[in-house]
Every structure is written in C-alpha cells, then in structure tokens.
Amino acid sequence: MNAIFVAQGYSIRLFYKLTLRLREELGLEKIGLYVIGSGAYLNLLKQYPELESGEIQVLKEWDITGEAHRVGLDQALLDDYERRLGDPNLWGPVILDRRLIYGKSCKYEQNYKPRFGHEEMQRIMQVGLTRIEEMFDRIEPDFVLSFLSATFGGYIFHLLSRERGIPHLELRTSKIQDYSMWVKSLHDRPPHIIRRFEMNDISPESYRRADEYLESSRRARVTYEGYLGYFPPPADNRGQRLWKRIRRFGRPLRRWWWRRYLGLIQATLEYYRTERHRDNYSWSPILAYLYTNVVRPYRHWRTERLLGRHYVREKDIGSERYAYFPLSMEPEIALSLYARPFLNQIEAVRNFAMSLPLGMKLYVKDHPREWGLRKAGYYRKLLEIPNVRLVDPSVDGLTVIQSCELVVTTRGWTGLEAIVQRKPAVLLSPNCTYSILSMARVAPDLYKLPEVVHEAIENHHHNEEELRRYVAAMIDGSMQVGLYGKLLNWGVPLDGLDEFDLFVDHTVSRLEEEKVVKSRDRLGSRLGN
Image 1 (tube, one colour):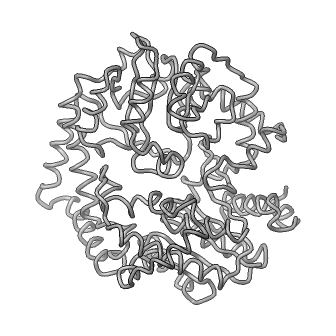
Image 2 (cartoon, one colour; image 1 turned 60 degrees about the horizontal axis):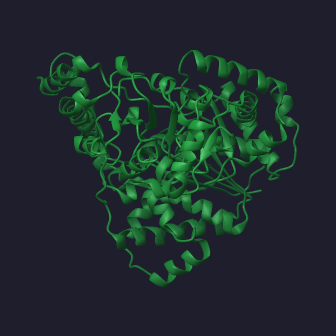
Image 3 (tube, one colour; image 1 turned 60 degrees about the vertical axis):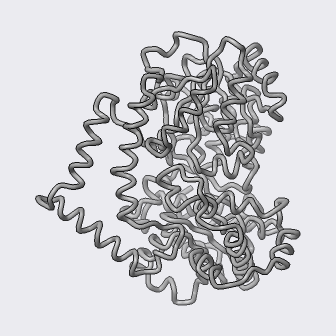
C-alpha cells in the first residue's frame, strides 16, 4: 500500500510523524510528502535530517514556483490539463491561493493587487500540475491525506485524486470545541457527517456531549479550536497604545528589548540566506513585524478615529430592529473556496441589506482577525448603503446575535451560533455543513434572496431535536485531539502523547470507514478500546 501526504505550515511535523506511524500500522511502502511553507519544513529538517534520506519522496511547493520562473508557457499542455481536470476550468486553485492571486502582504493587509501576472500564474499552474502528476505516477497512492487545502498545490491534489478515483481525506476542524475530522470532500458537506445525521447513526455518548455543548453555548459564547481572534484594545486606550508601540519600536536598544530586535535581525538574515526568500508562502520577518506591530495598530486607530462615531456600541444594541451580517476574513478559504461568487463582500452586504424589510437595519461587524487589515475606505463604502450600520468590533458577536431578528451570512459559522440561540439563519452558499438544518435557509440565487429572507423572518420554527442530532453527528464523526493546542504546537512532543495516538487511531478508522483499508485489531487493543 502506498500513500501521499500533503502538509502545510505547522502541520508539516504532524504529517511527517503520521507517515511514520502509518508506515508501521498499514505497512506503507512508497510514501510521498508534499510540503507547503519552507520555514516550517527547514525547522523540521534540523530535527529530522533523515527526512531527505530518500525513503520519503518530498516535493516542495516553493520549488514549483521557483521553476515556473524559468520555463516557458506551454498553452497546449495547460489546455489539456484543463480539459481533464477543470472544475470546469483551472481558476479554482489560483483563486484559492491568496499568495498566488493577491499581493505579497495579503496575510497582513487586505491587498488585492496581484503578486504575479496572468502568464506567471499560468506557468505556476503548468509546473504544479506536471510535478504533482509525476508524484502520483511515481507513488501510485492508494489514498491521499492532506491538511486543510489553502494553496494551488493542495487543490491540484484533489483534482488528480478525483480523476484517478483515489480516496482523498482532508483534515479540518469541526468548529465545535476542539473536535477535528477527516473529510472526503473539498467543496461539499462532509459525507460521513451527513450519513450519520440522516440515518441517526450516532452513539449515546455523542448525544450526551452534544447536550453539554448546547447548554454551555447558550450560557456564554463557546469558540472552537482554530478560532484565532485578534481583538482590539478598548476604544479609549487605542490611541495611547498605538503611540506606545511606535515609541517602543524606536526606543534605544536597552534592557531586554535589544534581544528582541537582535532576534528579529537574525531571523531576517536567515530568511534571505536560505531558500525561504524564494517561497511566496513566506515573508520577511522584519516586514511581518512592522505590519503586525505598527501598520495594523495605526490602521485600526485611524479607522476608529474617522468612523467610530458611526459605530453601534454595546449599550445601543437592541434599540431597533436589525439583521446581523458578520464579515468573513479576507482573503480566506471561507470565500475563495466555499463562496467564490461572493468574494466582494461589500456587494454581498448590499444584496442582503436590500432584501430586508424596508424598516430594518443590517448590522455589520468585522471579523476579529481583520483588526487593522482593512483600510478605512472599505468601511466607508459599507456605510454608504442606506440601512447598514457598523458594530463596534470590540462587541462580542454573541451579544449581537441574541438581540437580532435574523443572521445573514455567505456561509460563516455565525449562522450555526444563531440557530443555537434559536434565531433563523439565511445562507448564500449551499455547501456549508449546517445547511442541512431546516432552520438554515439557503438562497438558491440573489433573485430569490428577498423571498428567502421574508420566509426566515415570518415562518421560523426552531427544531431542537434536529439541532441536537446535528451537533451529535458532528461530534460522532470527529476526534477530540487538541489539533491546534497540542498536535500543531511544536512545543509539545508528539512521541508518547495520548492525543497523537488517538489521532492515528481515528485516521485509520476513517480510512476503514471509507473502505480504503481493511479492518484491523492491533490499534484498538493497543489503546485499550
């Protein structure tokens, strides 16, 4: 049996360890490892130099982008790939990869100016398709396991797996507490969750945990693992904190600060000395530091100063009728993969706003991680829509949900939070997992949106048993392993870690469920199950 593993960033260590364990568990012979993110890979290579011994065939995404600058465009070859693999075309992998279609600084600011020209993008796709298909030919995998696809390479693996009929499971968070799952789908809702939900094939223990989750979610907001909030400081301190940051950055190198600056300089020099500077996934440490500690605080302070008077503060929430639209992180796969027609969120907000009853406001709240990433002009355009109001970004989203009449979203998880709070939700994207609930209404197109919104407001009926079954199905098809807190935390050793053993065990169980491997007894007996 052979396999290919696709790892990105901090998941590289986890997937390398997984290859070693599955080689032992399943008797894997030929193994391929596709890596995205040179920084994490080079750090792992320092710990495990045997990684490049040849036992595992490694393909690096930054080598693909580097090679693309040295080759000519073969349009006939690319057209052939598009006929074979297109979805229906090959723009999907390009749009998914924010570092390919947007600017260099897209991780640190909303930057739509492309880093590469159209022909450069085509050459990168050409080389990526060629090299990844060569890996498939060499390894002849029986299955592919990948981390959440967020680059062109990850998407290409899905396309080739589909063409060849090779099972491809992707690791994602369930967005319910610290549960994660292996999903056999790129665009659609997780089939193994849908099956459990529709057939009610769910264990009593999963139902018990679902009841606990629903009870705690209604007392206070319960975030999921992988939720990386970037919350701004209180409004009255933002200007002072910004000035302190700027003064601190320019402070003479004294006390312990000189160590931080020295470490930053050393990291930057190492970045340019190694192959990391050729990786479009990676960015200069000193530029990343400046954007995070100076540019972002300044932008947020300026936005607050210019537009703060227009904000709906916490004390004012509930004083008028409103629907709630939470902005998605941008650019992010929530839009680029799952809601491509709505990449322009300003126009999505406009369509939602004009679909509400005439006397109702649409409250728009920015994503917590967008703090300081968008310029003030973005919010000005939102405020030009007559019935739109901006919510103070420091207000907790649960507070906004509890007083609203309706939550409208492209496909964000806030819709499920609304349903938990017994509020109706309207979605634009049908591939959101919780869209199987009768309380989540999906607008088939924008022409039908006003009708769907009207139906959601006037004829909402909460079905607690259906919601309970959905949450239980999500838990039943997932694993509680602390993916971000432990498995992806390089400060936590994986060897001997119970959560890692559970992760391996669940991985093999999912491969069994998908009929990739036959049932085995050894892991179950070893873990005492």
